[in-house]
Amino acid sequence: MPAELSHAPAHRGIVLDDRRFDILLKELKSVLCSCCDILISDGFVDYALFSIQEADSHPMTGKAFYETGFSALQRLVHEFLNEVEVQGIICLENAEVSASVLLSQLHGSWFMRRILKIDRPTAHEISDQVEIAMNIFTSSLSAHPNRFAR
Image (cartoon, rainbow, N blue to C red; front, side, top):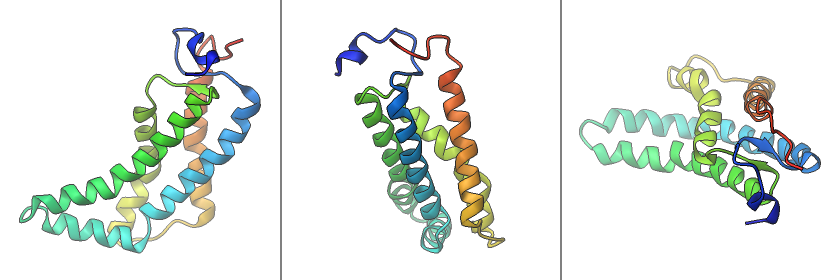
């Protein structure tokens, strides 16, 4: 564990390094936009529909979809957040839960609209939604009184 984390206050959810935090935001946006692209892709949606259709007869199909789909994307975001925490950029209460919440903010209505074959969001709409999710995420970091550990 980096020295700055070992001496971090007990209060979690703080930004430890402002300089690298700006880089984190750009990288996080890229990761989240990529996750959205996967979630709304024709292949992912078709796999989801197939898994839903087969889940009653073949429960392992649904489990396989979850583990290779949603859960895999959540692990990707979790690993990213965990890595920036290890680097001492941020300090989270729980990187796994943070990843889950971030992805939940992104896939909700779009995934359902794609499953129902209503429409597909544009790259601009995805970018806007990712920005909103990131604003909520970063607001939760800055809401703590000891945001900056010095």
